Amino acid sequence: MPAAIPEDSVGLVTPQCLQFDQPLPLSCGRSLDHWELMIETYGELNADASNAILICHALSGHHHAAGYHSMDERKPGWWDSAIGPGKAIDTNRFFVVSLNNLGGCHGSTGPNSNNPDTGKPYGPDFPIMTVQDWVHSQARLADRLGIQQWAAVVGGSLGGMQALQWSITYPDRLRHCVVIASAAKLSAQNIAFNEVARQAISKDPEFHDGHYYEHNIVPRTGLMLARMVGHITYLSDDGMRDKFGRELKDGKLSFDFNPQFEVESYLQYQGERFSSSFDANTYLLMTKALDYFDPAGEHGHNLADALAPATCNFLVVSFTTDWRFSPERSRELVDALVAARKPVSYAEIDAPQGHDAFLIPIPRYMEVFSGYMNRIADALPQSEGGAPNAR
Image (cartoon, rainbow, N blue to C red; front, side, top):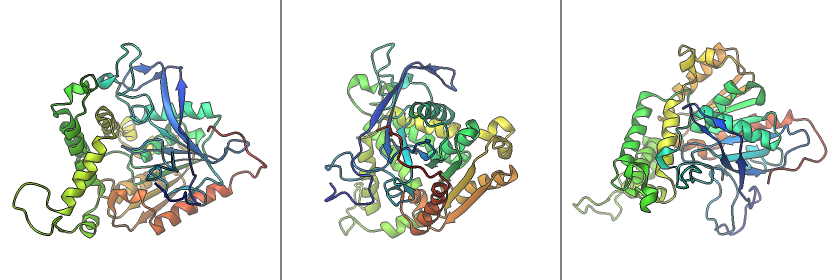
């Protein structure tokens, strides 16, 4: 628990669950007739609703991006390093909206929600979601909040894919698109890692073909293994060497198969913690959305053509040791944006932390991020007072 809430924190925040009764058609051919989104907001919406920022989360993210839910909460929201008064996304200047995507397991409608047709959790019967489906639901959210155009849509990793899709699907509804540690599609290697994770979950004896809710159990081993595999890909070789090296947990070899190296204990800890807080069906669903994302696929695999509808400005950021979403993938996106004659700024940040770097307040990264966001804020119309926000 924080001894005191830092001055640059958004403070104590309360999530809000919004209900939608208008059917949402999905890419898979099905629709959700009634659905809910769990959101948090920070800052105040200005009079003409021009200062709104949408935060899109990554695979295991959710609506709690900044601040604290209570004084008993040990850690703040997952992107607290970037969101708050005076931070890159300055809540003194912006109204920030963060949500848990459909299919998630932190309050929005997803596999662990009750199916109104059966009265039981959807489980594996919840429809497969795509990035485009999420963007459509986020557009409905914007309508509900009275936001006709986002000042920016911002996301890292899978969140960056959503930001990119916004620029294509709703080009008139955002002025800036910020894509961090992301790509316009997954590589074959990334798809392979996702499949290993899905197999670990689905082959767990306690998975029960996704109907584990009815057995009051969780496929904990499968989830743990999936997270361990994923976590390895989020770190870099340099980062793991600097953090763990080949240090032994107890200072000597035990000559058995129990964890002996610090890195083994770390991965087990991360896996165990994740398996008690995340839903297995949601993990399967989120990784499939990652695999399916490929906006150029409908345009003869020409990414510049896919980006043709975009009218916003772009910021693309990559990290040198990120091998899950390497700088090469970001440069491919930047090249396509240049070919499509779109205004784009690009920064490649030298950082040893791998893919996780986008969550860390690395000075050069925060300098670039803050500089770009301040330009957006400086262009906002000056007005007295503000409209009521959604909290």
